[in-house]
Amino acid sequence: MSKIHIRGGRTLLFLLFLLLLWELLIRLTKTPKWLIPAPSDVIKETAFSFGDFNGHLLSTIQLSIIGLVLGCGIGLFVSIILYRLPKINEILYPLLIVSQNIPTIVLAPLLIIWFGFGLLPKLLIISLVCFFPIVVASMDSFRQTAPELKHYMRMIGATNRQIFWKLELPHALPSIFSGLKISATYSVMGAVISEWLGAKKGIGVYMTLAQSSFRIDRVFVAITFIMLLSICLFGLIRLVEKLVVKGRNEAMK
Amino acid sequence: MSLTITELDKAFGQLSILEKLELQVNTQEFVAILGPSGCGKSTLFQLIGGLLMPDQGSIQLDGATINGKKGLISYMPQHPSLFPWRTVLENVVLASEIKGKPDYNDARRLLEKAGLTPFETSYPNELSGGMKQRVAFIRALLSNQSLLCLDEPFSALDEFTRIQMQKWLLSIWEEECKSILLVTHSIEEAIFLADRIYILSKRPAHVKAEIKIPFSRPRDESLLESTEFFQLKQQIFQFLKEDIME
Image (cartoon, rainbow over all chains, first blue to last red; front, side, top):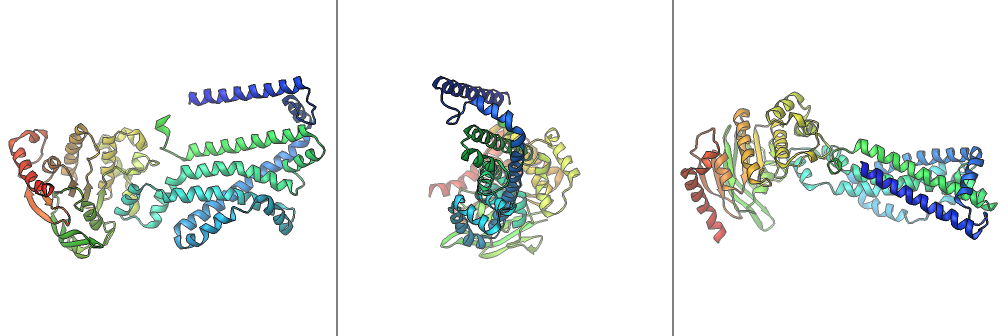
């Protein structure tokens, strides 16, 4: 445990060093604020406009969490269905992979044309980006269940359903959580992109406004919070993982 | 409870694995199967477990044919095969959970007998190899079938742990009154544990010899040093050697 703390501390120190270097370089070269703002400008701007930014932030948090839950829920459901029904899987799995090659940037405006500027197209976009990592992670690890455990279950007369719920699903949990972590970072990105293309509120909206008025410092505020939000979601999933996944790396700490 | 196997044939395509195999496990008897590796012992277990259908012949449990019927035997695999996300207590009730409602009191009683009570809430990755095998054995006992099939249960353990485990197994077996069918590669293990030994030929496997073990019970490790033990070991080795030499 303490090892992790030390490592985390070192990362933080290094980050601080980079920020300081950045600040120093900007001041020394006298780079104008509208080109690249110094960290101090970004902090100043955050403090100044937080009241205004707050609403945007909350809206994005809400959107990305709902999208994440929805996308992962559907992803898990689909992967269970596909795994339990191999015939359907044969037909659908290649299509699923192909569907991931449609760029979100192209798809998003279409969804907005079809479904308007409401919540639905945004949730669709986020779900679409979150969905895939979960499906791949869980399908693969359902398949890779330890053969000796499966053989044991068969020998004691377990049905396929029992094998799935008692063995394959719990066995896949660590990998499902890996998928979840990837999806969590994607969900924030998905939320920002969807807001970008049309919304009243959200970090994406704030960012486009800032960009079009050359308020690069505000763009940096937005970037900072997007990163913070991703890290928080990631951390939250780590926490749940620690509570749910038992008996697997604990002896190695 | 008794297991009777008559004229059992099994082939995979052209490859004949078992040929007219006959064996019998009587009530509360400890029977060992010895044979060269690759002689089809795992296939035999899969047939008894109902995972495979025999091509010919029958497998009978208490007179009823159980060809292809699953879930009628207790099974202890070669590797402990414990579920890493289940605690020791949750692991030992697994086999009975598959059949219905597990009996936690019985599970605790057996864990106590095995000296595993302090580890009830531990996860398998916190246990030693011998402890894991004990947990796997208790799990098999708890599935409450009268025939226990052990598939080379101690082959992965070191010598010291193995002898300890064999003694432990005997002590539990003497109290729990089950019929046991043990597959092993070790001649010593077979003699030390069993009432009767079947020696299988190499593939296609049939019973080459049946040997009754004359030693009385309870047995302890002093038996391993007796002359009779050595002679018996020699005799069995002769049977096995023919197959190795060919």
